[in-house]
Image 1 (tube, rainbow, N blue to C red):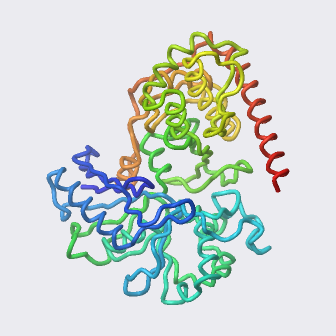
Image 2 (tube, rainbow, N blue to C red):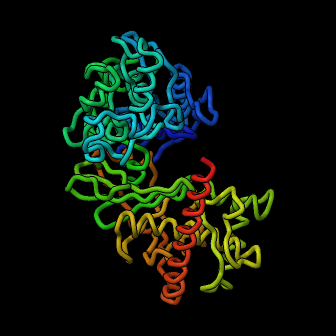
Image 3 (cartoon, helix red, strand yellow):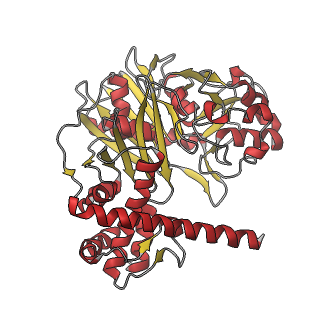
Length: 470
């Protein structure tokens, strides 16, 4: 059997699969944050492990099995989160979340050697305060003794691998997002280690995404099957894409808290665009990813603003009514302006039209990701996953705005992790498909051009006001 674990930002999830990849049982638990404010976001390493122990036990119970029947443990994870541990497995710091914004300064804080060819080495186009490298640079400046040997950098999934089977693992897919790894060299980056005062032996063992290693030592409190393997399954977007059969010529979009567009980019290494994220894909080759922070987060905010006390489903029902009245001259919703008085702009005389503008505006933001940033053409097959994919109304609007057939995805990150452990690909046959309506093409193409101009104008005005304040 395969135990798949997704160490998500909001929830930790687990599922047990049999050898035919039938899901026998699954469970979830809230990620155990001890601090979560505007800047500082941390978990306690001991509580993380305790949460996983309970979650694994509950999942196995629901699956009608015991941990000794598990032959593979595959972990996919939020990227960046990590702790510092000593040789005895004691945490020197809390688990610092990727949401934590206390990291060192951005690109201006990098040495010339480290900034040179940055995007050829790192998945992300620039250093941010939330990246692992930024936090390690901060720790070196503020608490240098924490990083002294035998201190070791232990990413969140490596913490679980170490507790489960005595091996600290990190795959190249996750490592490439940290700023500490070189995609070009396929190893921890010397300049990054030097910037943090670290040595290679203080970093976890590197493996290719989706590959496994045998358990080094059994944990008597949670023993796995004899000869069990530990599989590092990359970031959760990669696992979710694999679970939905992402392959050449297709895009997997996530309609979750954020909007994410993900494609298999082929065998040629990136970077593919100045602002895109790229990295290794399971089984060989590379992926490209583009995202916007405003997804279902904006949908929920708009629902509460338009219809206080209502859920997103109520807004979607109103949008279905409002779409029949939209014209070229109708106003827009700009997701990036959520929580401001400028979220809606132009002529939107009814609540139903405002509700439609929300779904359309998010679909237009998605079109920028798929058509502009990932440079996919009209007609590209799109597979939609995430909470928003449950709405047939929204998926049809997305198909119309993108001018692409949209398939409702059926897989998830847990299936993707299990597929990596099994060395198999997903069966994505069947499922509901939403085809773009020819009658909508001209209207929506013109509206997209107008929406993009409105978005650019608002962005320019915001920048000008910010400069005046400074």
